[in-house]
Length: 248
Image 1 (cartoon, rainbow, N blue to C red):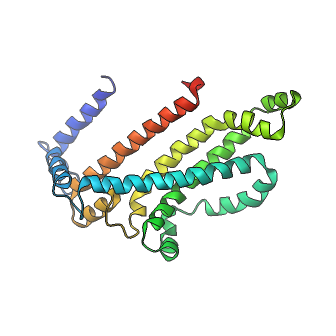
Image 2: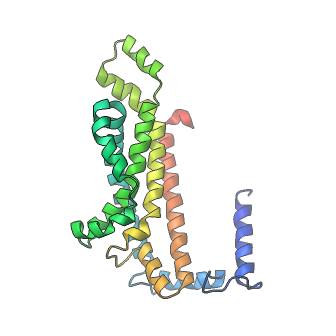
Image 3: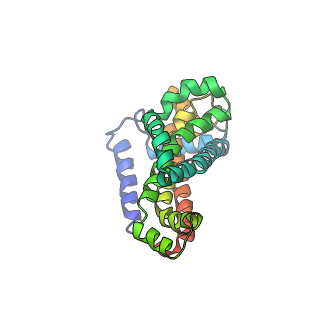
């Protein structure tokens, strides 16, 4: 009940500011009634060439593909950079040089490389999610307690055993932190990714609604992104609790 109270107060303030008090014009931010009407429109006849379910499916598949690609590439690279001084010396300068470039800045090259298909959109999402996975994994590996590693060596642990039985389990909390940040980055870059020739998707809805000056439809798309992001974060937290039961 305590957690629901701020949300209820926010809804009341929203209703008052956009309704009776008239503090915010509908063009700048929709009232609850306008938002509800927009939701009924996109959930029924549809908007921006598709119904809501299709937009959600497109965006969700894009985020999942980009997040999976970033996880499967970023975590191994982070493990390599964290455990190998030679790899860190060779690869890390290049990574640090490219990392500050915003994913949206890659869109022109992305179009040249991949065209306007799904691969281009996934690449933009991957770019946003890749760096957090690498950095947090590398930091987690370097933060493993050296005393534990030395103790394992004293008891005869080989290098492979040290990596799989000591380093990775100890680094898993930091790795999951990177995964959470990567997932957040995927949703944050969604609109930019769907600038690349999208015909459906929640980001596409926001783009078309902006052109139509439809604040209600923009709000509905933003709310869907927020709810999907929260749902995926909760699922990732469940996975983390299952993999790391001692951290519950």
